[in-house]
Length: 93
Image (cartoon, rainbow, N blue to C red; front, side):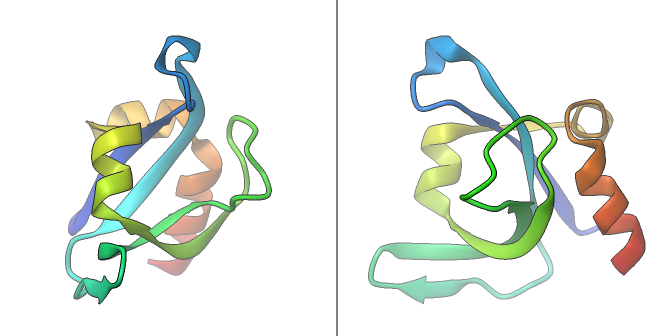
């Protein structure tokens, strides 16, 4: 997908491994600057539903969170981990 970068989300304790969800960051949207730092427009699982392949919603993520709790991955890997994310992205594209 053009203009989107994918991040695999990890559990609080890295030894627990992947949380089974992916964050899709919109590279073409302007970031927001908040008191906590730089925030990026994204589509991801809501905070209330943290099970693998959770339903997704538009949101913002801090660049710090992405750097500490996520790893950049390919679109192919993202599709394997989080099919519901792509159901949403394909609908709104």
